[in-house]
Amino acid sequence: MAIEKQMVSADRCMKLTEVLQERISDDVQKDRPEWPEKGEIEFQEVDLRYRPETEIVLDKLSFKV
Image (tube, rainbow, N blue to C red; front, side):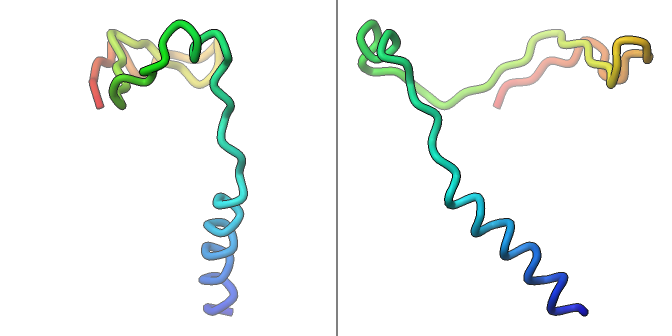
């Protein structure tokens, strides 16, 4: 059973290699041929809840990666 569990992880990883890349729109390519300039994600004061009727679980979260 332990080997079977380990192979599930390997199988999932292999499936991810088959996922197609998202296509960049032609407009972005035309207007900004150098896009993306850098790899960066930034969240500024994000409030997050699991469902609209639940309380906020992340309050004013800010970070940059």
